[in-house]
Image (cartoon, rainbow, N blue to C red; front, side):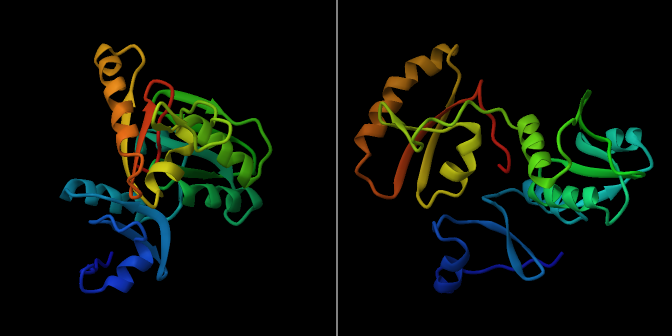
Length: 225
């Protein structure tokens, strides 16, 4: 893997081309000279190493059986398929979207069987074998989310409401700085903080570069973070 650095203050045009929101440091992953969806604000050697190792591999890994997939990865899609088959190509599409959070593994065999191995839990896929449906299924397992609020983005008591399905759009890819409170409704401390947080949101609502947001951590999770 080749590493390169850009001094944003000296290469302002180049920096703004790839980091439009202007928040640094920002680690970007390029494939064949083109930027990918994967970008992170990482500050430790371990975090950077884990990020690189997750992405510096083929999207689909071949295994001899389900046991090898389960023991090699904490979370993996396991399927039977022939390399280059319609299912294999669909799995490649799905894998490229989630390389930092799961592995997609294939055992040579007829197209058909697809499972999610999530630590000790196994889920069998029963839908249509196409990339869009497989991707929806993967997201439903790896991400918890409340329904997207009607008319999203929606503000409630001065704070932007974020759910699992809108996290990447409203937080990760936002063109503003985002102050996010992840809370639990049962948490006494969270209940005490919430009125202060909402007041903070209303107080800075006129600041164009800042959004104050909140997400119920019991009901929602976020990938690609």
